[in-house]
Image (cartoon, rainbow, N blue to C red; front, side):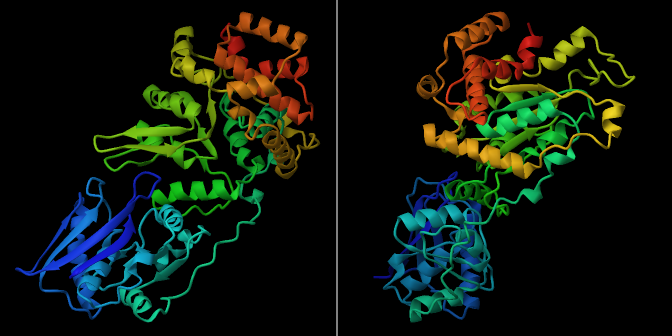
Length: 506
């Protein structure tokens, strides 16, 4: 029977579902038809495959060829099925050995010459292939990315002939890739250092607390005070990603055709304020990850926060709570991970000079303009930001003082942050910002005086239940930085001082 079955994988969000390529040769006028919900790039593969087979010195069958991509209700897109279709045609026409085909999965695009070209999302396919107990054959240009998966045996080749030779003679087209080293240290030199920032001790303290507990943070102050400078130094004090987290981040970047170069370093994304909601959360006719997913396990920095369209900012509310983003389309609903730490920066008013102490420029904005400017950030979104930090301008004396007290380098602060994160993982299995309500009761118990202080603050500042929980979580992080098992009045007071916009609004 002229029937061959080849295994490959589709791309569906961050998942890589299995696809079976069934190739049947029958009598009749020569033709080739592809069924199974293929989109345009998949339908065009018949022309690429025909030329690749002929130019690889094989015979293209002059028969009626039917190719089914199962399951039929799963949309198939991209050129990743070319290699599997070609192998199916060669196997069905008895031009290559078929004994071991069931132990392999094939992914790759074919050039007309028979050369193999890379495709997106190979890492996710490699992980899924290993779970299925099969070996993976891919183009050589995708080998480095796929080798991040240690559990899968991967072979790669540059030409269709090499793949066929491997199956016919049991000679590998090249070699089995070894996994990349997972002991690469955190590269602090890739980010600017904290000791380059003069002054701003309050803001630096807030950044350390934010890194230690993975809390969201908002800087606000006049232009030129160092808000962006401070935010760009946060990645240098963040703990390195675990191996599992690094692979998760690499999978997401692979879906966008990007090879994540900074292994174990939390991603830092800074989209422009003209970005659309689709660019931020993902989407498109074939949904792809947006900035919130590309910053998964890392930092999403939004400079000029109120300059983003309000509708764009509002889409951040759900992923800030759930750590994922769901994109619904008529054909499917996809879920991308979006567990990011939000860091934002803004001016206090449209002109930027409200309450500016050390310059001659004064604010020219009316009360209505200031109110309209700040209302671009809704209350529910501001409620989800743990720390509201004013960044004041420095005096000329502070800027010119060469004997100014030097700040600790990022490496020293990072060690403290790593120590605190380990303490949190040992105690509750997650960072303080990720504490559930049940865990919050267990690890953030307040004594009588602390309860009274927080009760007074809730009444005077009008804090919501969410804001109350976030204040307690920040206080827990401050206590961890002090190596204290219980939360004291001082920790509560400092946590409240780090939400200055709540005080300004009352």
